[in-house]
Amino acid sequence: MSYQRSTYAQTKYPIVLAHGLFGFGSAAGIDYFYQIPPDLARNGADIWTSQMSAMNSSELRGEQRLQQVQTIIAYTGKDKVNLIGHSHRRAVYALKLLTFLKAF
Image (cartoon, rainbow, N blue to C red; front, side, top):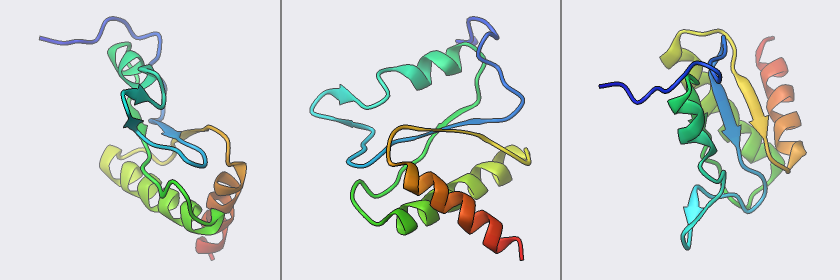
């Protein structure tokens, strides 16, 4: 039995949701992404949620995110992901910089 309802959320590459500063999966009954991941999955998305330190430097969080993105790429066989971040932009920029530097 499949729980997929439609394909409206299907994308070419996996979607990775990344929380910002003080981010969490769920705490005290509060879901950080408010049921967005299961809804996207039910509608065709290959959805992932990154797990990073809630409070740490942008560089460390960027490194954590980079490792997770590399794992997702290896697992899915895709060469890219759709990275959607919520706040803490510096962690996303750190990820881009680390990715660029590791290419050399």
